[in-house]
Length: 599
Figure (spheres, rainbow, N blue to C red):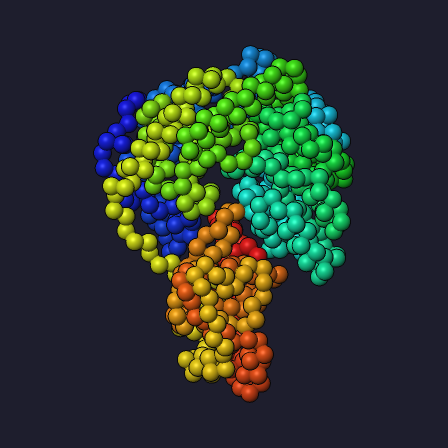
């Protein structure tokens, strides 16, 4: 294996510094295999120039220093900030001894699903110990954290039910939500007032079906936490069920490792708690915690991974049991204190170098970079300087919000924290200077409205309307003027009618994985509006003036009069909206980019 990377010495082509996973998420064409090649070509280009930060290989045990290589096998030993072994228990002697003993006594495999004969004495003991730690009576174990999130949601939620979820919720929760029901509502990040308004709106129309409200104890991209107690109260007010994912905070934060729930005095008080063992407990696996025996039994047979995946292996159960014992001991408290101290020190050092770290101190330190191109070059440079960190870029975060997502351990030393801050700062500075030398092409004008069906269609008229129809509408329209940055149509509102842009440009912004994404730019002659007809509850996008804009507003009263005078016009008009709506629903169940089509 080569330990030298030349990525920062050879010119990097623009193609390796532009584009995103989002560009290839909707692969099209009749050849299911062939249509994957454009993505692979883009990936290979980035890998060839050492700016592909994914699919890396570890050649040593998880720890403060690790030997990590890229997908091509090039790398070196360095300070590791890319490992989610939050308390360093993977290398703990007691954890390793427990794994060896379980392997010797019970073998490496459960050899069955939990619904049949895949439970072991160790997995049942683990259920008891988790129940004690979380102050809930019942635990359901899953083979992975992903399966716990996805399986719990799809097991409990039916198509007529509703899900209200934080816009930054983990992908397993989002995909579980969209697989379970079309009635999915995203709310602004950690905004309890928004949750209440959505619940009010749902209950005003539907008192018969269930509502699940989904949030996390610690959000892994922003390292922040919701206010859980009032959120649970809001759920009870509207007969909704609160579901909290504690994958990142359970074990690594709070008294006895109880996470955000312990820190907010909410252990045993939340309806449903889901978590993963892969962050602090040295193993794959996950769980759902509940005070309801009925929920446990129901999930065991209707949460698919319980029936159609093997249960935790004896080794996994033994590892998590021993890790949990350490987490809840005096040693665990000391480890959490060291971890928190490292987080506070690294954040302070980076802030002193004008690198903003968002969120609260935790095992996760998200250091803002901004430009994706800068992030890719900075990541490559940091590797050559002996710092392994994860680069996060769009679509996992917003466009222009690339960041280093550093994951700490108690075993990191003060000297390492100092060196890391120096190298991270130098890497970002180096990348910014390199990007200034590169001539990037002008951004292409997006034309995704018709494809995604978010509301109306890019073009001179709605699909079934003639130009004569449009002229009739415009003759009765009112002209409106909007200054740059003004909002023409706000998310969650019902526009009065149709907007037709006659001068200037506007951008269409949607919620994508928790952040605002400019989906399209619309100019003169293009039609916007009646978004309320294209979603079950509210508009799914915001239209913002990109320049000074003049638009013709055709209010609903005028539309109604036109339909009365010309029934054929009404048929054509609503046929147009039906076409757009069909486009939108056609993409509704996409698991690749569910946020594009959420209500």
